[in-house]
Length: 301
Ligand code: ATR
Image (cartoon, rainbow, N blue to C red):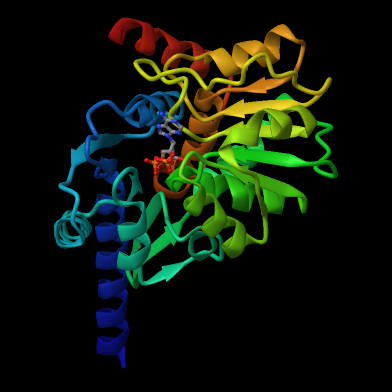
């Protein structure tokens, strides 16, 4: 009996020591993409880790665009002891496919931007959805989604925005896209109304919440041509782009006195759940963080 007690207490002590040592190892996380090097996520996580005095590294990892490459890379990161990763273009669908378990949100979007590695495997989440919700609420705390909401674009980013709008209570969502079949497909999948690309100006003018998920307005791309469209007074305008910080479309809205949300606000909010899950610290989205990111974007120009 005494031996059993000795053995179990020794094992417990060893386990505790092992845990203690493990806890002393730096926490590892990163962002997987192709490309990955341009990502601002390492800076965001490094700032939060520094603030919370957490010993950890968050690194960009370039993985070629195939499921096999993605899956091999995830197996390796799990073995090394990574706590989790953010996942960006072109791997968000791969992340969901690779995961053993997921939140409800990720399959609704059909993609995940977070994978958390646990003893039981990997868990997929989509914080693009919650990041967008938080970003919009930060710009318009009294936001009403009772009126029409308009989503411009039907690519990968637009699915997360649609799910977020539905979570915010919107049930009158219009979608428009240059390639109209893609808008029709998302309209069918999510129960939205499709508007032809030629009629987007009219749709913009009647919407209470407008989100540009196309790449139009991004540096080096043409602007989102709306030929003098008027945005409803008080309507909230969001643009997922953050280079430039203020796209011509956002400027149109802000000049008219409408609340605007840029892609940087969404980026900071989507990063927070990953930091909390992997590094276990507070992830405040505040002006100091924004200023650091704006400084970095200016440095890169
Ligand atoms: P993401 O994953 O960031 O959404 P994506 O899947 O490549 O990227 O989608 C890009 C979006 O921008 C699409 O809605 C695309 O329209 P198409 O489906 O017609 O390609 C839109 N887009 C890109 N360039 C455009 C342009 N010059 N005019 C209109 N829409 C454009």
